[in-house]
Length: 303
Figure 1 (tube, rainbow, N blue to C red):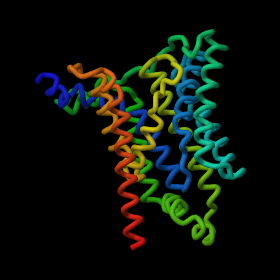
Figure 2: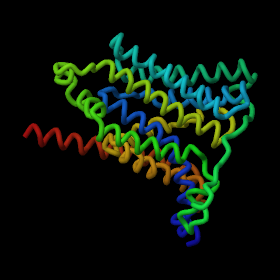
Figure 3: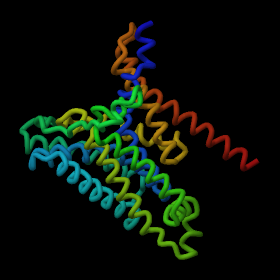
Figure 4: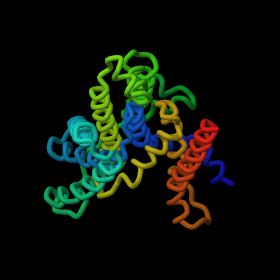
């Protein structure tokens, strides 16, 4: 009974918020990218490279801020490479994305061996310090959101709101959505389709890398090979489940993060393997349900 009550506790809520940060950032990047008409299956690899470059930046400079900046720069670079492949060379989007994931997986292991003489494991680094907002942290219940929280949490909320405002309240956001839905029509009226797509993919790379850097700089204070552990694909599912909308993707990420929090924090008489696979089962279930709904829409439109 106590464990069931814990599912609704403030500790569980805060754990969900923290676990949702990398998912939300990656899902936000996938949303922006997909709104431009590009499906990026390389989110997992972008997050992994962001996680590695963040640790590398802190290792070289001793500054978490510079580590984050390096992660953003690498994310932008990888996004640009992916954009060149799919936009300039007309490479298949799915194949390019999966190829990026495999490339990131191998490259990070090779580099950890070269730098730390370890098979996919870096040394410990300096973490990003938690912050407490004076005054607001004293408010009952709500104050928990402003006490000993990572700056990433507040940055994530701001980025989600900015993305929503950009997408639905600016001329550029309207053009981005038009490009994703009707690229030929957008091009006909003079909208530079490729330019918008290049920018969307680069922004996607930066957001994914930022999410990856949270895993390494804040959550683990080191890099571990394959530490993203499928979160990139969860983020893609959250993007679909959230209706390709910034706030919807955020809500979906919170749902997936809650499943992760249950796996981590709840100890019940259930096989551990079942709890470990819970977030991934939920991801697959969402994808199946969304696929069924989309197929029904297609049938209805045909009929």
